[in-house]
Length: 132
Image 1 (tube, rainbow, N blue to C red):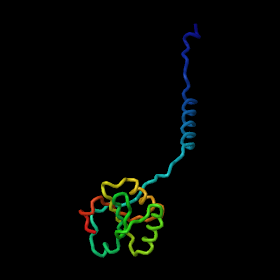
Image 2: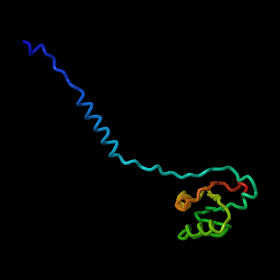
Image 3: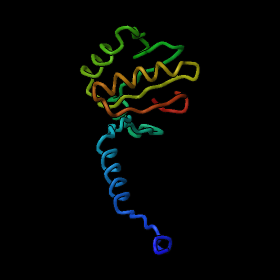
Image 4: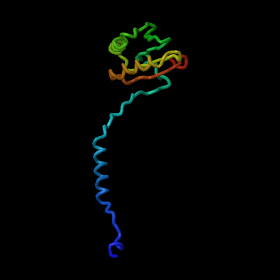
């Protein structure tokens, strides 16, 4: 009769220990990914004319890349952009993208600028609104 009156007790301390060890294990085993993002500023207008003279304007029109109304070849786009960047006193890029152009063209330029650590980038989709 005494055996029936005894209640079974569940000891939860070992359970808590195992859960804690599993938590620590999974936290240490998890890969922490580096946050990747593009840092760029979107500005409405270039304020001063001196800034305008120092600005490199790349126009994406009809899926072609233009600089000073000259077509830049897609195959050598990175070399062209770096040559323009190094020969110019400017540290500002303005990318004019018309609405009919594919987004891949814009992303291609952004990738090139990001890889080469060129940070001052401004975007526009309508050159009529901007005073360049």
